[in-house]
Image (tube, rainbow, N blue to C red):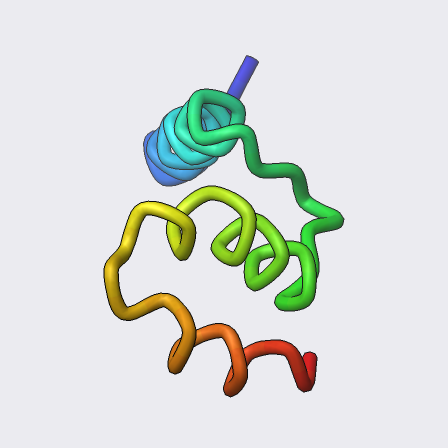
Length: 60
């Protein structure tokens, strides 16, 4: 599969990173706007001080 120890190590690092992205529901094509949108939908509603946070993030 890999011809050198360095390639094997890099392959293992990439595999672990891919597993973590999938587990977190992230893809390689995710944008900052996607992250902010997810934050606005999932995190802000459970915070008490959400009104001040939303006004600053809606510009994105």
